[in-house]
Length: 227
Length: 227
DNA sequence: TCAAAAGTGTTTCGAATACACCCATGT
DNA sequence: ACATGGGTGTATTCGAAACACTTTTGA
Image (tube, rainbow over all chains, first blue to last red; front, side, top):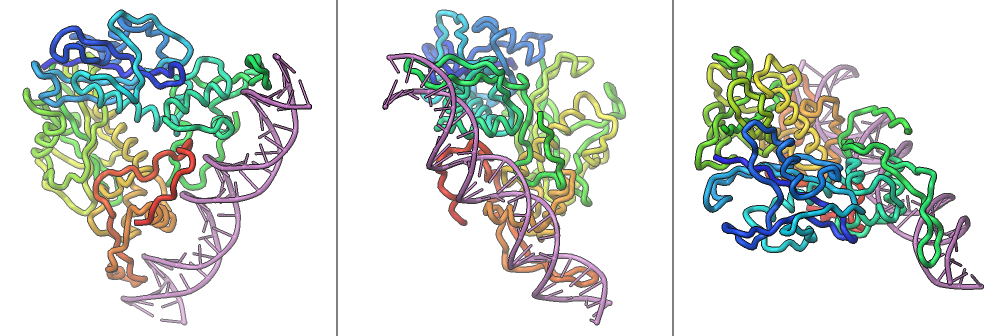
């Protein structure tokens, strides 16, 4: 009974949430698109394995976040052999364009090509995970470059969430939660003028839950201290 | 490389969130307590497997909810062989007391005995999952019997969340969200009198997200229709 | 009549949102 | 001047929480 690890690697590219896929050259699912990944090594942990596999597709130094999604084990998920798959969600910040192999392409996450195995479901699972974590964690840090303007950040959120986001409200929510802070610098205005945009950074660039317990929260909670 | 499935089965028993464990009779971890589960069959899906394994410990008809938690694959998680484990969260409603084998006991989930392997971490993972889902889904249905009073329900929430919960506020939150509805009947008062408690039921007894997007919600959202 | 338990009315609070307006820059 | 894009001030909304008070029962 084989075991493989897969990754749903997402990045906002050109205003569109995109997923990294490679095209299969041989059966099964010849010509179909698949998630990067491969067989788990005999003495290899799951996390280390997916990092190793991804090295062959992207520069893993660009990976700002990696978390386990779910494990699929339906006996018929592979038409020929029995193979379990543990899927991970990986995020790459906007703005970089890692080199990828010939057979590998970025695809819009909401318009997938013909997908191999159950990989389309796994992509959806990754998108849902990202969307919900955007609302109660600081996971935006993994979509954004180290320094960014608020309108850029708004664009990443819009692409990942799939609907319009107000820059004004996004700013206030993230500031109140202490997720972002101004760097003091500002970006030059665009071609046709406009006020220069202040530059921000995420205060912490690893996953933190910033808004647990939207409801049924513990009684008499202390007000969060300002950062 | 073996693969096993495990279950963190939780139930509120006597006002305490409890987990079902069995005591190992032989090494490794002889005398240590472990989660129910066992090896995945060669042509068996993960979900079907954990249901089959649980049959040996509890009456699975009592299981009101089952969902995948996570997969552990550290090479040294088993001292002798390499075995991956996929853990599930299972819930049993308060009030029933399923027959269990000799070696099996319920333990308070916040005061675990000596645990085998990485099972203590898996129990914590299950508790955290339950706690967070209580705040944005109707998962309370899986902790409660089909019909209950509000003070009983409050007790289940208090036990699972680990802090005091106001019956008044719980009632309003769950009514507003359309999770619960009065049956019309009421429970007889206790030994020393008191107003009889109205009986409620959950409107839907399978998992539903009732409060997605606590923040950054889609613009111009329609108000939820009353049930 | 009182204690016990359940339930309702009302107020307060605060986060999130919506919207009007002001600021800084290039042409 | 004025168009463009960024940012702030302020009002509104609404769910959640807190708390006082009423209802219904048994002793």
